[in-house]
Length: 448
Image (cartoon, rainbow, N blue to C red; front, side, top):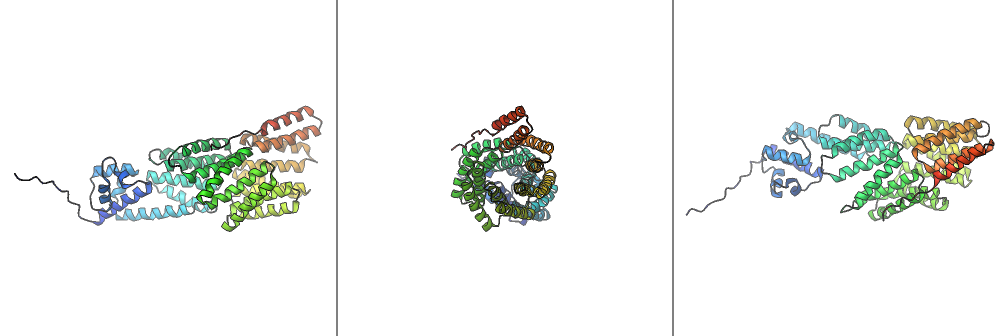
């Protein structure tokens, strides 16, 4: 009997086109984070995918259709000629360069590059990533409404990809966009949901968990929840130390300083702020240097050290004018204006507050708009009480919309004092009651 023989499949002749095809598949696979086994499942073995990537096997069109679906690429992507291959490589370099600029200090340089890349894009996954990058840059620039437009598009297109990390990154940035557009409560809810999902997954994404905890601390401060802010920042600090994330440590120390100050613990606040300032100066982190000097000015003023307060405020203004974002220049000007009121320099107070108001309206920083109006009310309090009450009423309306409970309570108490000064005890009592209700603490402690 003649023995049967198994037919052996001969490898395709090695060619430049096959090599380029294999390389294109390999790069696309690595970009989406799939192993060779995962890419082939359930139809192809790891060995077959490896042979394709090495240019040793020419896959049939049906096989390419399957692989393109797995990688989120159009079939034409894998059938491009050498000129198209060169264009794609150049585009990948351009995207990488834009991504490298995606930091707070260089976001303004990254954004036009990203927008240009979006105009010439056709690949769905790449466009999703670019919309995420654009949203991130706009969040750094405190342009929340513009950021949400990009991020909403990214969220809509990302559902077609099996990429949990990408979807979480989009949701994280969407939450930040809600904060920068003035809706901290909505952003806080989104981050809490994301934190629950992260902590229930395996393995836990510790860097993202730390970032979410850190930003939940910032959201809590926005909403006047100082106890919750301290708890969130404390939990974030634990993971930042374990991970060794020096950049996040600066932000966390700064946030803890703000939380301590909100609780009235000025010594604790100064301790954390000095840690943050030292680390920021070593890292040349101008954004946090601005924030820290601004808060040091506030604390010095609260302690009656007005000369030191004005020096810190002027330093914050000078750095913010250079480093940006422009929205923060308004906040620093407001701090100097508040210091000027306390030393009786009403002309400087009005000049700084009016410039802050103009900038804040221009960039859409509602919190800074309200703060400027409070300072203008202080400046008008003695000679123009009706104007002062109008400024405070407008500020209260803004803080109420922002759910900025601490600031709202302060403004309502100012309105109460004005009403009492003109002899209207009933209105004064109403404002005082509203102030109490606004500042009652609600605990939102993170799950431990």
